Amino acid sequence: MEVARYWRTTKQRYQLVGEKCPQCGRRIFPPRDVCPVCGHEARTAVQFSGKGEVYSYSVVHVAPEGYEKFVPYIVALVRLAEGPLVTAQLTDVDESEVWIGMPVEMVTRVLREDGERGMLIYGYKFRPALPVNNQAPQAAAQPMRTPLPKANGVHPEPVLQAAMP
Ligand SMILES: [Zn+2]
Image 1 (tube, helix red, strand yellow):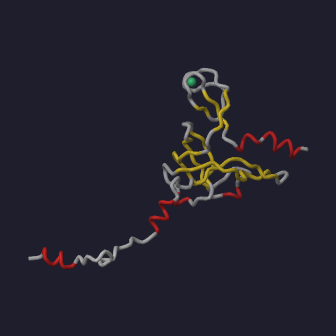
Image 2 (image 1 turned 90 degrees about the horizontal axis):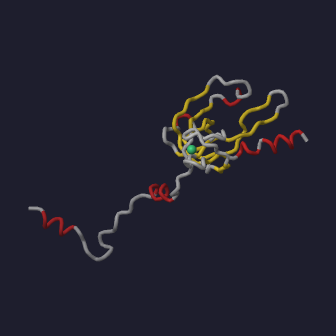
Image 3 (image 1 turned 180 degrees about the horizontal axis):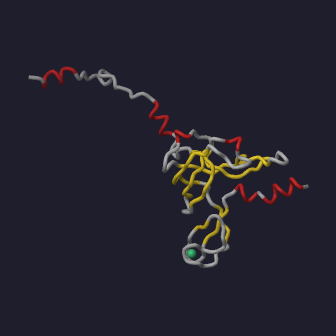
């Protein structure tokens, strides 16, 4: 029963649910029921896309209690596509591969371990987002093909030779 309740009450952590200000349209995350821009009450729940980009990041080597198993790990400030900044761990990426402006997307991962009961706490992290046009890398990986000179029956060499003095 306890576990079931845990799952139910923390389900909202798996999704980036924020709010939208009815006055100025600002997207708010995390939810705070008041627009930080115009001060209007904002209680309209809005599902965020989970897409964003790395705004800044740092590598954590000395972790707080419950996170020791994960060091070193990367904590980033992610600029969500909807505008707000959110702090979260990066995953599925090496420290040397992270760059400012890198497109990322939200995933659900083990966030930490509850020491007392060995319970795994899940939450969201961000991983590098796949390129929107996934045909681009394939095209780049293929070697450039040089057209055969005689393919259409015209040989280019005489033309080149005629141009030389
Ligand atoms: Zn507002």
